[in-house]
Amino acid sequence: DTGVSQDPRHKITKRGQNVTFRCDPISEHNRLYWYRQTLGQGPEFLTYFQNEAQLEKSRLLSDRFSAERPKGSFSTLEIQRTEQGDSAMYLCASSPLGGGPVGYYEQYFGPGTRLTVT
Amino acid sequence: AQKVTQAQTEISVVEKEDVTLDCVYETRDTTYYLFWYKQPPSGELVFLIRRNSFDEQNEISGRYSWNFQKSTSSFNFTITASQVVDSAVYFCALTSPGKLIFGQGTTLQVKP
Picture 1: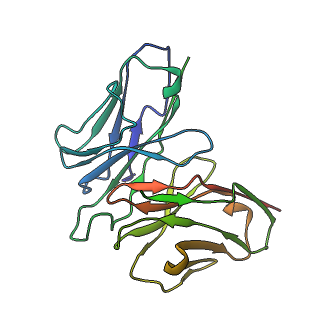
Picture 2: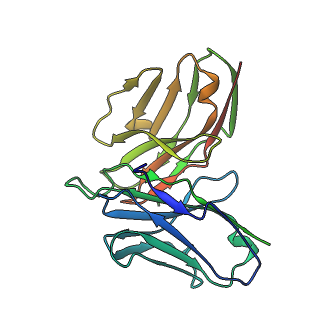
């Protein structure tokens, strides 16, 4: 399977614990995105990388959230001191850089990591 | 600010009926891209179509068709002769730029 993969698929944690999620994009894709989706809502943008550079962060990404893409391949999203409000589906997507303008290429999404904070 | 509005929260139809999902967007960009994604019960978002702001031609792909009207800032999606397998949440999205701004989604239920 050459699609976007995410690990773990489900995570249950207690409030105050730290969690880390991993995303492996499609291998030839330079751009990698993180979104958060709560029940009944559309995905909300968190951050994105072009190769290893983090180019944009949403104001939704509080100081407790950090994302990395150290070698321009896989990415990790860490949430420190989790809160119940962090319970959501965390989606990763990737797209090629290509020669087109920014935003031209569709993003391919992984299956998501469902986080439940108790 | 960019915004996407999908006013229909849920639609229920009987198989073989045609159904149109509405999408209205707001942007100040002159160049932008619009997308439709499908999210079946399994949860993974599936890309359906991309349309750029300079191309207002309607597009048809099998039972799916899309109507883009820049004058009304709308990008509507029609499924002809709906099938049970079309049951899913459908999202309209706008680039801003690079990242996607999603609407709240429309849940389509197709009953046999």
